[in-house]
Image (cartoon, one colour):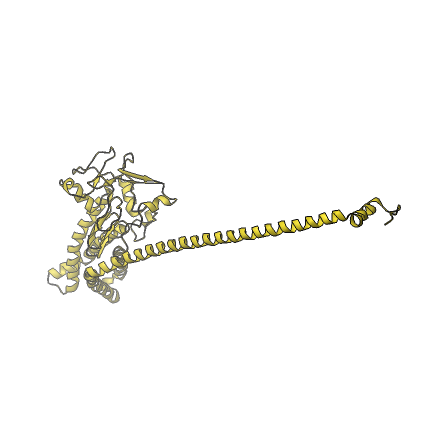
Length: 389
């Protein structure tokens, strides 16, 4: 083929490459075939690698699914265990019987109905033109009675508090606690562990044989409310004692005239006179219990701790708790030292809360994850056991 001199160099050179250079064409074909071979080989290797990656991903997914299944099983087992504990708690309360609660409610109603009937009759008849006074007496009586009933039911039906699962490990995993300090240990020198519940026991925790569980800051088991008195219902229990004492005192003061006339063989209500005697007898006993527990609150001790402290043979009891004071000295020999006593005001606020408006009302305090599990002491320099994350 003859070259045209008027063609551009780019066009002529391109024509030379395409038409005249057969060797380059064969080389290009070889290169093309080699490229295709390499592409095929690389695509095969990529497909194999992708299959391997898919298998690995499937294995990882299967492993994750197994781990998720195990975690779900553990969580479900923990939930079922908590439900079982709650069922056993309420079953034990039912087995103990509701007779004390029924007895107290019957006694309250026996005193309430004659009192309300007497003053309602006085208001209706405008007896001695003291209608306003009778109305005020009836209003204050009803107010005190309602508050007393609420305190009674809250003390009876509030869970006093039990040991959480995985204590104290779950506290160290949470963000609210960096360390836990214990100041009580068993006679063997180890952290206290319940032989019946098989759980680690925090300070001031005891096992109740009636409720069949460990109770946080257990004070005692009260048969009249058919419940243990522990950390979360101690305030309601003390308020029940206090408001019941006030109620008895109020009834005694407002029915004393009727009792006096009844003793003089006048024609006043006999039933109301019986109510006055009941208020006097129960009021005296409730007053003693109220003063006793107010003393315990101010010195930050429970009924169990009070008798343990005054028991000189406490150190000889196997498995009983032993405490250290602020200097690390053993105080299990009946000493009067109480490391949990941090001052009257702080002790009082531990039970009734920091809000004065809620002190004497049956309203629960604000609690944290450490409530009932760890307690401030006089000096936190020598905890017996200290665990940290």
